[in-house]
Length: 135
Length: 91
Image (cartoon, rainbow over all chains, first blue to last red; front, side, top):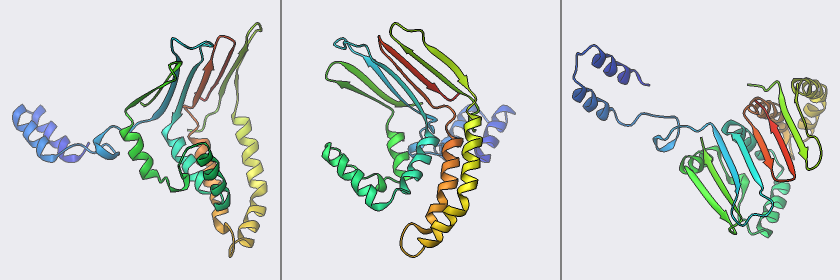
């Protein structure tokens, strides 16, 4: 919380200003900064949940929770992969139909992806339901 | 925060599962000792490859490795079906 916001709330608690005035002042200050793009809260974990759908035979359940800081650290690690190895990885991904170059993903891009990834649900061939979200 | 303990659980159909808390700090101590022992070689490799090759970026392995270890806390991988169950958790 910024100093200005604190001051406004203190003035409100001391009844120096009315609720309406406090609201007006807070609006004038703009949206609070949350440390991530778009004013959304900064997420702590990336969650991947796989739940068996009605057509699932084995009833596979997956519950993965990855700390965001670990993903960021992992991206830095990926930057250390030698160029020729990165080329091989990209080629292998392209062979699988994934046109993605990990070396070009920067931490800022990741922030953008994650802040816009509120809740994504993927239905895999009607068998399993994959839910990816941040918390 | 560096995770000190790892919760590991595995179960197969028709068998009794195993579940235990492993003091992962022991692995970190060993890994730390190994990294310290390897430091002169990595430094030498970075000097040798300074002009052509990765050079001093090799030394970044240390901070990034410790950064990964530090942020492992909270990682949880759990898979379950009718036959098998595996859980790896860094609480």
